[in-house]
Length: 445
Image (cartoon, rainbow, N blue to C red):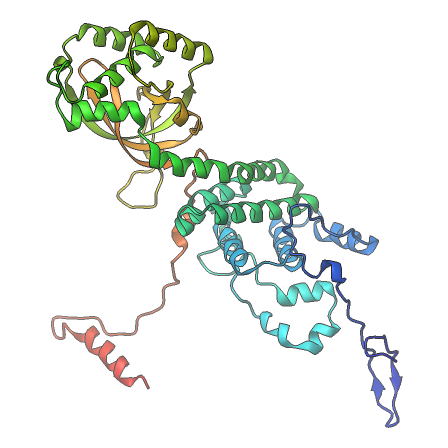
């Protein structure tokens, strides 16, 4: 009988019972190198027994925490995660309040006899590292369930917009791997009908995975390219230098670019008044800087120039006989906001009332407007001129439209407090604690 064939229970010459050796399943050669993250990968069809087991495991009458815990364990067992994906998946689960650290059963993976006798469900339990509840204050606790909310979309937003960007800065490949990893998991949840009550929320979360790589690339490019030609011209004229004589000034070309952009391109509701002011100011030295402030805005509207407007401007430039390369421009309409952080000295968005805040408009070239998305946040320094025009002097930060700060992020490096047995300092012995620490160090082998 071959070593890999089944053996029936029997009795040997000494009268001892022989245990049946289970035949190990061999993975087909065609699937040995499959990770589960290939572009056209699909899970193998289920047997009737597996389908029945899945239906029982993900029965909607079971608590959501039990269903999603077993789903995560099953997903990890059915995918080949390399070290990068393991680290990413653990951080993603952490934001959802799930502990992925080693557990008591992990050591059994080295027990070949126990593993050989176990069925698929037992092996999954033995090798699992993902558990929900009872893992300390850093993670979800069923006794404090009111402090937690099931929101797949919010966790994905926070993971990609904060965790991945803080971890990798801007790394195109890493961002794509992270987005594909989470999308693969969400597809697994949907395919196995783990939590139909959250299906729409999961689909919304999957959409974030689709748009994240492109929007994060645009965000990175905008940080490098903003504030654009028009705003740089305004800064050069009214912040860095001083316009003196329009005919002889060294900033003549910059002044022409500034005036033409402001006069010829649409700039929203305030454009008419601003254009009239610029036309009145025949002497450019009458245009003065009156204020400089640091602000954070959220993009509400993006108005890109249309082809008809571009042709009209080209015709006007030709009629004016101006030899100037003018980039097509439009405007953004923005409103004050706050980029949420966990810093104690920074107010939270819900703590600031923006209901009476005035919307503002800023001129930008079309090539920049093409990379902006409604909902993006921009932290910048803004200057105002005495003609009513406000321009962007400098951009400090740009955030994607799905930027989300999750409180769980603050628990990343938090540790459970332990009793301190060292004596506290007092007036009688102000150096008691230092002495105790020195004694502990000397006592170490």
